[in-house]
Length: 517
Length: 75
Image 1: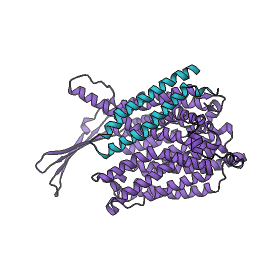
Image 2: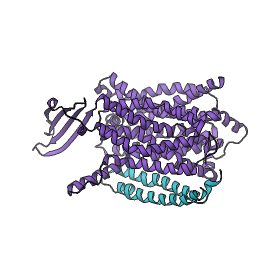
Image 3: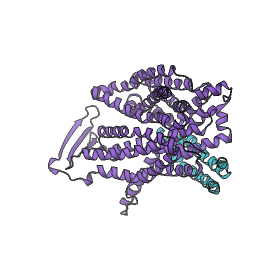
């Protein structure tokens, strides 16, 4: 009982810190549109270049470097001090992003400062996870590692959930104009209070007992990087962890939590508020299953659960996304034509003499769904067409909303299966003296690189299918792709399939609680 | 199972080669020469000089170790 009480303290302190780091990382992504208008004006090529660097570099490049840098420190000076450093670095960087004056005020320094702080965020995130997972695992009894470390696994999802809640709460509390002017900074400032509380809690905790023992015995690695990646005996397990576990976990995680969100908003065109709420609901319902599968992995093994999650994802993604698409598609609904309304407004820009025509049409459907089409046409002073934009938003019925919640929930369930046991799996794969370094790198390459590439590769595959269909229509041929909107899924399906085969064949289970190579 | 692990080692090496070709031909090179500007250029450079070496090099080495029976040591 006493041991369990002590563990709760450790879990609490570690999880809250990791949750805050994820929160900090996500709010930048969630507020990217506003941030770009404040710091990265699109008409300025230097600022646009820095924006691109901020987007890609933090996710892809810096995270693995953070894993190496802080992993090495964690194996040299200890887990506790290292993940306290990452927490302060992340919190400080996030708070400062909320304080930077806009591009209009300080010019080029604004996007440069955002880029540097974003890179620091990526670096900190790369170091945090390995520390927290190792720290908790080294406190937990060996036969309950899956359960205790699964608390750490909930933090990425809860961090996303909290970031959505704080942003939605701030939007509701102040006017849209105020939010766009200064209110977007509040979620960044909130971070510092949470970080300070977490810092105080972590400061009073003891070092990991296993690391302490290794230190007392004088067995600390002299050069953790060399021992982790320079020696074949360990490096081969780093590769196995990457290609047999974290690579598949990364794409399943990104598909369930981010691709689903972007698919519902951009492909299905569901209203932003409705889609945010449904994702938040599915995350809330799914999160306890991290603990369920973490605990189950202590009984039946990590490998079985993780690979089952991957296999289910591979088999179910296309049917799930097809169902999501068809649920929202208005072609499957009956329109209530008597309720159709439309209006046209025009605005003349006195300075440029350009005219903006705005056609707004509202459509209602018998199941309660509503579609709004806004067509914006920009005409030059001699009435020549300059630009034409069509934006469609669909407000779905309550019944369809719950169907989408269910479909996203199933995907979150796959996430919990592959992600719940993975911290324990990684910890058990590597020896104590180089554990922090060895487990951090495959985790962040799997998630940052394979997972982070998902939007780019999926968009490429979907747009290639759309282009092929458009060409076929132009040439009066049959369209080669029946469902071009599903083509992007081949990336997570392909990566998860390869990972499943590697995991199945190369990872061995030698007893009930452990999986190793 | 040992033989399967070794034979599949060849497959992972070939897959690494295919990933390299697909990555360079479809992502890296078109993005670098894209007329769209800095967005594509940065992404292309990251793909070619950071991500592809990690993925291709890692998968090749994994295949090589598998082919040499490195994953058969512990049962």
